[in-house]
Length: 461
Image 1 (cartoon, rainbow, N blue to C red):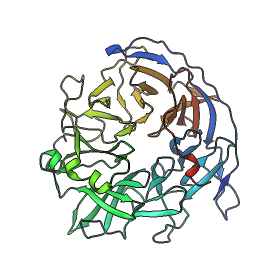
Image 2: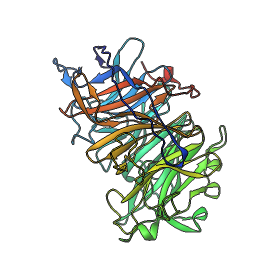
Image 3: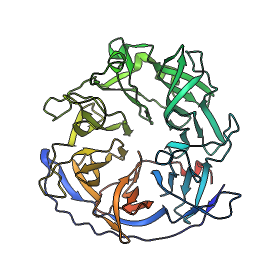
């Protein structure tokens, strides 16, 4: 493994917040954010043998933090740099001693074809295992490591898609929970793409097809589904995805989106647990978004969940186009009673700026941890990071682009699906000078307790 010299830096930020009440009785609170730990930044260099000089990092993505405050992330993600550049890989920072090491980098040989791994992106982890997407937008495979074991091929271009009988031609992204991996993949037959969701059971070394665009889905009224989530979600409670009608997806009209999922029962046979007759409709296609004035659900595929709580940045393109940012957005949350809620949307006045402006949108990636939803809100030339405590109906302001770190102006933020442990938040900051870094912040005013027990020790050291 490639070692990176440890570096320690303590940062503090002073945030002023006017705590005014939001609509619907939601209370606004200051999280009291103190950015106190640098995990890694673009001043670091990664040592790739046999190169003698350290290669500077250009960017970082997906900071996942475990209950020991170790952080798993991608360095030099090729989503921002195409093709992948030196240093692209998955890294882990150890809180105990500041070490940062690589788990897999772009020059490592792939286990199936022996060629350099190349572009590594789309990291997901349950802190026991991790999975990622290999290749550019089209992808050449899904790979991962289970319980600290060697890198394995979950599916690649040599893999025959079960139920279709031909090899995969295209991959989107994956998620992992224990020995199970769900991913979006597409074989091609006679020039036609057959997109679907696939399940890999590492314990049984078995790959199966959950559903594809050729099959009628009973839960959806016997229709075929299309526009299936590029990034499905799998945790101990749910396997989740979004989809539209396959017929609608083939046309040019605005799509009506729906949310679907299987409930997960620990120890149950996956083939029975994820059978089509047990698929549930969590939000019917075109569902009226709560407190939207009747707008239909037409966008939002990146569902996130934890402990049965589900959240997504949803939107409506009614009277608009089917591409780009929807005209209206909301952070939609499904509580364990099956009810959808809308705590903030683009009809909400920006509570921090207090200048009469509204939120203009939300980033498509949200995080969910311990009953809280972490999201990024946009304004005109503005971005802010918030934590919403669902049970307390309290919105915590974390930071915005007025934040200065060591005389550097923050330009934007990024978090992962699981960035929060207790009152410690992992986040990536982009600065206006083009530099970036992964940081840990303490949110001392965030009332919380740790209930998620990550298996950090299982990841290779």
